[in-house]
Length: 247
Image 1: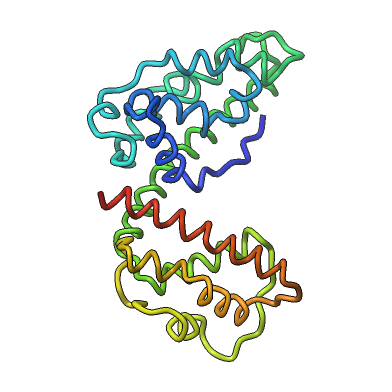
Image 2 (image 1 turned 180 degrees about the vertical axis):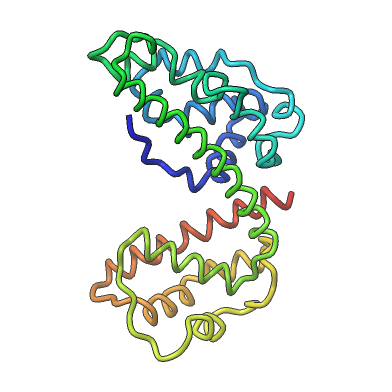
C-alpha cells in the first residue's frame, strides 16, 4: 500500500482536466483529479473506488475559485479534519472497496484488520494527505515561477528536464550554460509570456540542435532527434502553462 508518487506536475494535470469539456466545471474537475491523478493507480484497477470518489461532496471553495487558484490554506481545510477519520484520504482509503483492493487477504473492515495492517493503513493515509497538501503548495510555487521566468531561465529548465527524462549525459563545457543559451537564442532577458515571437524562438529547430550539441554527449543522429523532440515537448508544456496562467 506504499504511495510512491510525489505529484510533482499537478499544474499540468489540472490543465489537462480543464481542457476536457466534460470536466471543465471545477466540481467535476476536482473529483476527476482525485481519480485520475491522486488515486490513479487504484482507480485504474478498481472501478468501485472510482465510483465512490465520484460521489464525494465537493466543497464550495472549489466551485467558487477553481482548481488553479486553490491556496495551501484552502487545501488544508479540505484535506485535514478534526481527526484522522475525517481527512480526505481517510474517507477514501477506509472504504470497504478500497480496503478490499489494497488488502485482498483480509476482511475489508478497518476494525477487523490486524494491528500491523492498521498501522500501515494509518501511515499511508497520513502520507497521502501530506502529499496532496505538498502538491498544491508546489503548484502555487510553479504558478509564481511561471509568471516571473525569463527565456534564458526557461531554456535552462527545459535542458535540465530533457537530461532527467532522456538520461543523456552532459558534455564538459568551457563556459556557463547561461552564456551558451545567450549566444544561441534571442530575447533571453525577456519574461516569457508565450508571445508568438517567443514561442517561435524557443522552438527554432536549428538553434535547439546547436545548443544540444554543445551541451550533451551525442554520438548518433537518432540521439540528437530524441533530444530535440524532448526539448520541444518540454517547451510546449511550459508554453501551455504560461498561456493558461496568464489568460
